[in-house]
Length: 298
Image (tube, rainbow, N blue to C red):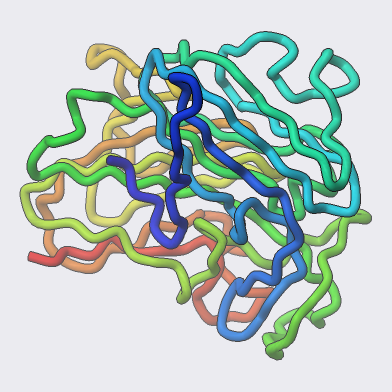
């Protein structure tokens, strides 16, 4: 099963033979790093929202409740769904979900196993940049009980907390800026380093890391101490004969990439965005931002 460090998985129940998942879009108070909180929007109390796990062929209902003061929607990024379920009003017949309302997105999972995302598609410069996004994994049934295998999801985000002067890390609760935003905090699974959680591995493991990016900037993610193969793109597998061997991959806005490497070099290894600004917290010279580590346990 894919693990999203620091973010919980979305449970489900059954309704008339369908898997029923419930998402609540709501205002949240979210800690980026060391006492710096933001007034964000998220799903079920977090940003990113909980990770959804499904299998090919699943019949699903995503019941989305809107506890925001404005209307919203959910787009199932990369999934092949009926037009009315795609979540992009008013371009499509998908409805707006008004404050206090809910809507059931119903469809069958037709995509191959891979990495996908979900996010708001209403007032996108505000709602997506406020945190309304999450990961969706179409699981590979044959990998569920594979030994010596680690599988992680890392969702990349950025935040404009412009009330803080450049370099200032004074604890407090801050509003986000959506008008010509100057992004100054960068996160993996909603946290800035050193609050990001490491990716734990053991020597001999095969390790897959899945990256997803919904927001505005592109992020070249670099792994120290290892080379990886690029094994998936936008949810679809890359055949072995077409795989690139790299140690840095550019995760552009709207993309997901899956990479895989062998854990064969013990230590604590950085994995981070290679944009210098993006590995700081509000420009403070200490290491921060979109930065985590691969930690060998044995």
